Image 1 (cartoon, rainbow, N blue to C red):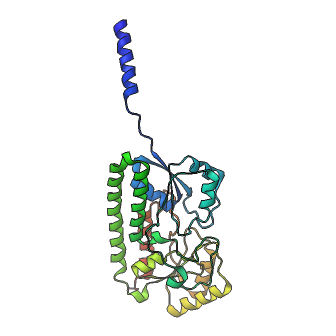
Image 2 (cartoon, rainbow, N blue to C red):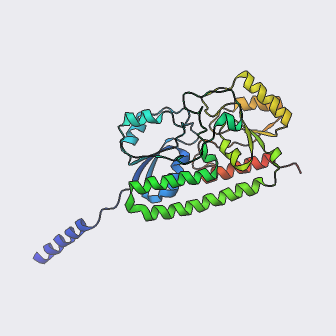
Image 3 (tube, rainbow, N blue to C red):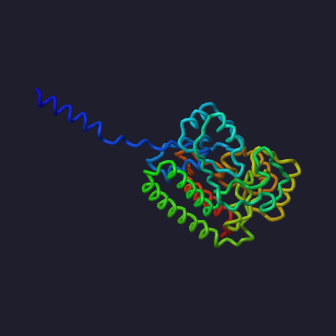
Length: 307
């Protein structure tokens, strides 16, 4: 009996001596594109809460008490920056969160919307978009900067997981390089003068600048702005003059404005594209890389010369 008791005590002590299973890093990401990137790099080492869900619009999002609670329990908060989330500072303050914040666009060379890719006659004061275009992830080269910043944030939050995080990051970077090569190869046969696309709002400036595509939009960089009658009339004249073939409705946008433009110009409405948010898990753009491939297929189908 004594021997059995001793064995039991020894076994119990051995259990206490085992290292505790490391908890995943609790990360709050502001919207789905960032949440996906964190998951790709963090893998099983992270537990991600995304505030603005699939097909959600981060420009006009209204945080909830549950969001504040999620921030309060987080080890790391991941944001886009460049004025994308005009509500995030208020939410951080309300939550009492005092931890690190990773700004994924840090190090990106920002572009100014109206000067760089079209004049919409809009001023977006509420979200800070008057200065810079926040949609920097639309260039894969910038997405790699986002991934680098996420890696730094995760390693700082969990240095004991650094080796795994760096390996995941390297694998993800290779996937980003592959999708960038696909974009360039698919667009190469299409003459630059024919690479003209209309979208719901001005979310593709970095894509256009990087890949040589001209994007036009009746609404500026924030979906909170509304197109005036004059904006719409100018857009219709431009589409007719330049013989633009297709307009694309974004997953976050009300389709009625582009349906009106389509009726008045004869430009057909192409498939749905994804700009500021991913699709649900069972949709065509469940990850950032899926989104870039899906949009590319939609754009090239519309731009390809008639056979």
